[in-house]
Structures are given as C-alpha cells and as structure tokens.
Length: 104
Image (cartoon, rainbow, N blue to C red):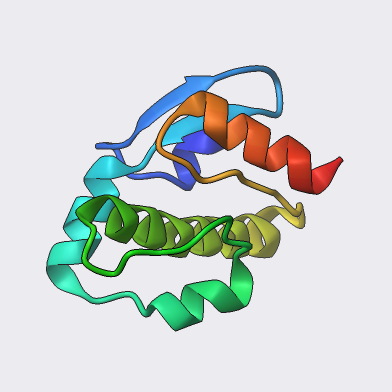
C-alpha cells in the first residue's frame, strides 16, 4: 500500500503493519523548486505547534511536507476508503510525540 502513495526518492521505514515513517525531504525539495505552498493554506488543514519562520528553509520543508501528506491522505481515502493521520516533524521521535499528543 505504501509504495502506491509515495515517491521513489522518499525513504520509507515501516514500524508495524499500519505504521510507517516517511522521509519526505526529496519530495519537499522538488516541490519547493516547482511551486510555492501557502503557509496560510497549510494552517487550514494542519495543527501547528509553535510558530513558522517563513524565512527558514527547515520550516519551508515542514510546510511542504504537510502539503504532501494532505495529498497522500486524499489519495488513500479516495482509493482505499481509509483515513490516515500523520505527525510531521524534523525527526521520528518528534513526529511520534506530535501524533500521540493530538490523537490519543
């Protein structure tokens, strides 16, 4: 299932039957070179902890990752009828903590 929804350049680490960690850096960098993702649009469908520094390349990657995850969610729902959730962060531990804090 995972291979249907992510780019070949992205790194997938399975953590169980229904859980995985994705490194979307390659897709984010490609997306950043092609289009600009609106910080305001991301705030409409993502919960942001803290502030976003628009000048920070790190924060720009996280914003683009949220955009990619939104597309993956839509594709999974459309094709399989499943809802999925994600924690987006700069490393696995923070992503898991973010997910657990807001979904438990």
